[in-house]
Amino acid sequence: MNQVQERESSAQSQQQAAGPQVRSWFHAPTNTVCHLVLDPQTRHCALVDSVLDFDYASGRSGTAFADTIIDYIRSENLQLDWLLETHAHADHLSAASYIRQQVGGRIGIGEHIRDVQKVFGDLFNDPAIPRDGRPFDKLFTDGETFEIGELRARVMHTPGHTPACVVYVVGDCAFVGDTLFMPDYGTARCDFPGGDAHRLYQSVRRIFELPAQTRLYMCHDYMPGGREPRWVCTVQDQREANKQIHDGIGEDEFVAFRSARDATLGMPALIMPSIQVNVRAGQMPEPEANGVSYLKVPVNAV
Ligand SMILES: N[C@@H](CCC(=O)N[C@@H](CS)C(=O)NCC(=O)O)C(=O)O
Ligand SMILES: [Fe+2]
Image (cartoon, rainbow, N blue to C red; front, side):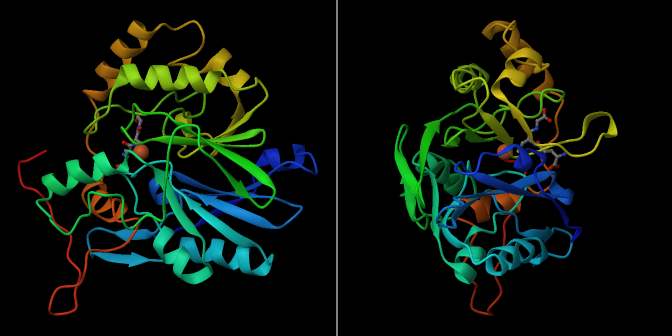
């Protein structure tokens, strides 16, 4: 479970001096990609979708993957302004709270996380799960802008995979979370609570309206056909070649495909711990009287 792979984004060499620089780390156990976006002028940066190692069988969490990124931030003397979450992930635990504790930064997520907290607070019958957006530091609205050093970032609300999903557009880069995956894999599932394939289609069409050369950074790669992990391509690449949602595919065709595929998918292995931790911005539930923190499993409720 603690296998860590680190790769520099192949697109880094293509970047212009003044624009954002991106470095990415691939977390092999959950197929998740964590991206650091950096303003080279000021050395301020933001980290998108960090991962905490977690072995469900033993209930043990680990920080090896996060520590690799923390070491990089420290060794490069970077100032981490933001820990950005594209959504409340259902397949891995966020390391945002741990990383904030180590190197600072504010944890941001889309404002509709409140709805997700309510759904899962009710499912887990846990009054300790907040419903008001705490303990996130910042809830972003659609179209809101913010700074990473001198880089301007913009938030797009892109529901479909979950109701709270957002994309972060930073200069000529966009961190698309679980909307699109690489063109040879397709799109994210829409069968989680509050998911909606029609809304995902509309969200992807909004992403496709970004300039054609915008570099899109994926949150996951499932390495179809056993190829090497890949996580960046352009809007044009997606519009031309995404096998599930390229420009030639209409909404009804996409929704029919997505619904049929979703009906075949099992739940992610880590969905139960992930949801309980991620609606708390990556914090474990408060320890009980014996000092141990517990995660629940709702029996026959999902
Ligand atoms: N087998 C994986 C499943 C991961 C999964 O369901 N990924 C979601 C994103 S959180 C997805 O959209 N998958 C798309 C698909 O497989 O079509 C696990 O257990 O973690
Ligand atoms: Fe997801």
